[in-house]
Image 1 (cartoon, helix red, strand yellow):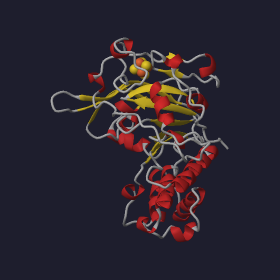
Image 2 (cartoon, helix red, strand yellow; image 1 turned 135 degrees about the vertical axis):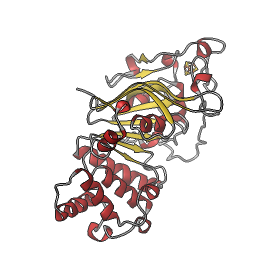
Image 3 (spheres, rainbow, N blue to C red; image 1 turned 60 degrees about the horizontal axis):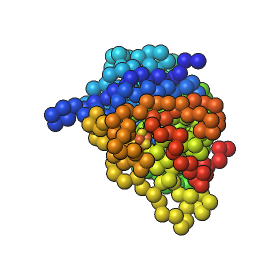
Image 4 (cartoon, rainbow, N blue to C red; image 1 turned 90 degrees about the vertical axis):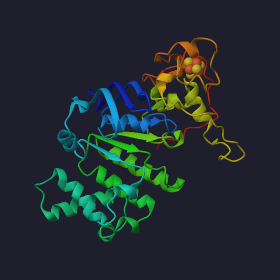
Length: 344
Ligand code: SF4
């Protein structure tokens, strides 16, 4: 089947002081129909830039390659064509719901506006009924009363639910959720993820869930793509990536998670020293080598860009292609002591 979103050779750069700075480098990635793909990496890894650039929402970016949404290249689309697609075929849920919602408009009216953008034929009563149904669907209690409230009268979790209601108003083929739970506390985070999971179960939408926290994705994602330095470090079925990581960067992110067997107590959280490079093209060989605990230096790690290779044997237990860009993928230690949260 045709993937909902297909990124091919996607490269994103920004104007630098002297020369352009490359933030995403020759990225190839598919989001399958009806799939939940988690895109994970630290801030500066290029995960948000990748998707906002693909959707024409990244300001000041020079974007090359292809971003095919249901076969249509978004990078060749005019602004008018893009705005037609947004909301109808693709919608974005941003981290900061308060900044994304209109502060002087009741939330019911904002959801209604999203409904009417692509449904001019509905009567007022039908729009209202659909808006209330959407608010109910995302778990907003007493939607008739809540619909008259303004964003500042709602909690962070409730505002994020409103954002989800707006995003799904036209049942888009693709929902890009950009760190949708980062500003929320752990309990509310879990509730919002649960809403997204239910939405996914009840629609055919594909979801790209962008996050820096590998811990939040296990319960929702079918596959995980780990980005580092604007390149794909590893991609595979969630279970394979969690239990059989094939890239030292993924192993490092997993080691940052609190251990489940101790309830997160008594463990000092590991940190990966250093930061992702600002300009990928300035790093020779493997883009992770300046931070990699397994780097063989001098050697291929600093001289040869590792290609994406298929993991085999135990590292591919699920059967979905599991690939990583590391010369020593087979030697990456496992983090079995970190339990992936159960999928319901
Ligand atoms: Fe580390 Fe080398 Fe693998 Fe890069 S190729 S992740 S530097 S071991």
